[in-house]
Amino acid sequence: MIRVYYGDDRVRATRDIDKVLGDEYEIVDGGELKEDDLPSLFLGNSLFSNKRNILIRDMTSNKIVYDKLPEYLNTVHNIVIFELKIDKRSATYKTLKDKIEWKEYKLPVNPNMKLVFDIYKVAKNDGVRAVKMLDKVKSEEEPIMFCGLMISQALKDYKACPGVKEKRVLKELSRLDLNLKSTSVQPWLLVQAFLLRLASL
Image 1 (cartoon, rainbow, N blue to C red):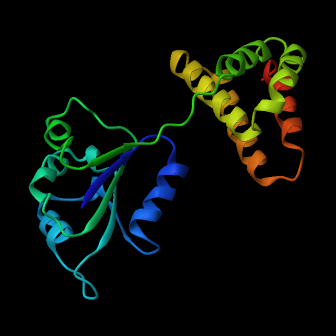
Image 2 (image 1 turned 180 degrees about the vertical axis):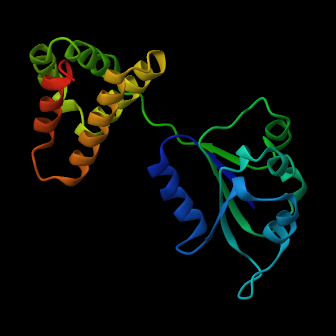
């Protein structure tokens, strides 16, 4: 059986993949597959079992191989294809949409997202005011996710204007992200410190 799971909520998707495929399964990089690999992948047996559990990642990036997927619907193997995004306009999707299971895993929309971006914008000129704004959302946010949203905004700034300051901000944010994941310092203090020095970077 073939299933396609897709979306940006990797935690929930991985949990379901483990439920469907069990503790031990083969992992295949779909981007590296060649057309000649498909018969043995979808129809071949392993030494130990006639039925295999296989996770294929990022197969849609390999259009030639992805377009061949409808030819292997008769597989006896337990296969999950995991993608970040699915193009629902593609001929392959239209052919398969009613023939295999499709499941989307979307991260919930953060209701404070606009406020996070506003805090970041304000911090570029006034760190003290940004820290006061942060106090209003701290109890509802998680520092690492908050940092991730700031990084996404900084990347937009860098794409719009790839200057020295924008590059410095991205480096500082990546350092902040690393520190949030590895230090014992109270995480919101690290975020506040970043906001306070952002204007001077």
